[in-house]
Each structure stands twice: as structure tokens, then as C-alpha cells.
Length: 295
Image (cartoon, rainbow, N blue to C red):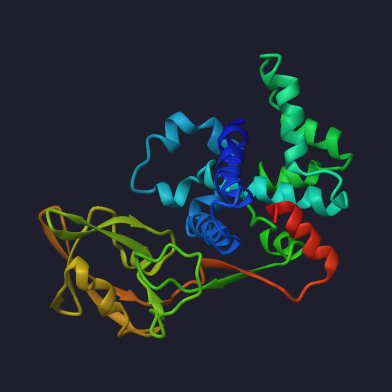
């Protein structure tokens, strides 16, 4: 499937065009990019579904998501944008600035946009190889058809941008910025709570997280934590009291049945990304970064 090309590359240029045109600062662009990275790495589905599969299965999986979606699928928009980023930085680095994704897209327009012909399934990848002169087969196999981590840290480093990860500060933390919370939660529930009729309900449960191992199911209504009633607003404040290894008692309603579960808290994962400009780089790196961001 090619939706990762059509939608992912478009998503990449959405934000990049803003910084290149001077509508936002470089720092604001890196914040947006960090938020995109955060959305992708917080989803376990990226380890199970490739963007090629996500593109092909869009109408049966991506647009018909269920409670297990976070564990089973990856967005070809968000991860596709990150693949486009990696490809752009790789082309710029390995051709010494001679070729970028911009050049590939211009050629794509001449080949398929102006002619009105459809892009073959392997058309985009072959075009990248043709325009750059690079052997990109391993790159596309790993990023498009694979489910491993993208080489974001190493490629951003070649353009003077440092990649950093930290713990989440809570449900409203989208990433993109260093933490200003000196008391970020040390543990995580391994699940997403939402509101149903004003009551806290497990809307998603992460595979192999504390909640799943305890037996929590999507749709369970959380009644109490360690014998005390809990609501959605107070749930994050309560979790800050716990440390990795602590054991808690969860009381939930599963349908009409009251269920008590024992849960061991895990250390909160470092799955929140932020990017920082590195000004202590050589002239070549500074030049590459300037060409990329049109600064």
C-alpha cells in the first residue's frame, strides 16, 4: 500500500512548510515534530504492523478501530511522516546535500502528476534510488515493511538536532518539550482512562502493561484504588503516590459484576520525545540543518 507515501509525506511537509516559510520558529517546528514522534512511540501497534500493511488495511483496520487498536495498528499518517523525515535526512547526508526529498517529489510530479499516470507500487522507492543514486533497499525494507524503531536519533544528529526521551507528565502531556514537572509520575497504569457518563472507564489497555497483567479489560469501570473511590480527575494525582514494585488493589465493574484485581505498578516508560537544537556542531552540520529548514 502507498498511503504512507501519499498521506505520510504530505504530513511531513505540513509542518516543515511552516518553518521554511517563516510562519513558525525552528523551536516550534521541533516541538511539533517531537509530538509526532511521541504519538508513534507510545503505540505498541508500531511493533506489530508495518506502514505498508497499515496502508493496505486502512479501510478494515485504521478506519474501524476498536479498543485494541493501540496494540495492533500504526498510523500511516504519523509514522509515514517520520519515515519521510528519515528519508529526507538520509538523502541529504549521504549525497552531501546534492539530493533531498524535495528533489524526489519534484521528479514524482513530473512523472505522475503532470502525466496523470498512476504511481506503481514500487514507483516511489525506485524513484528515490534513481534520483539519489543510493542503494536504499535496506532502508525501505526496514522502515516501510519492518516494525523496528526508526533511525531518528542518528539522522537528526547529522543535522544538529538532539533526540531526547523522558517520562510522561500525565494524560495531557503530548510531548515535544522538556519536562517542567519535578514530580512526574514514576509509575504507569499501562492503560488509558476515559469518561463514560462521568465515570472513569478503561478505554484502552496496553499489552503487557500493569493493568493487562492484573486482568483489566477495555470497558471496565474503575470504582476504587486501594479501597478508596477514584474519579477521572483525581486518578493522575493518586498515581504519583506509588513507586515501581508497589502492589495495589483495583476495584472495577465489568458489566454488572464487581471485580477486585491486584496490580503491580511498573516504572513509567520513557516514551515522550522532545528535540533540542545543538549549537555546538561543526559548520558542515550547521549548513545541512540550514538547508533542511531553509534558515
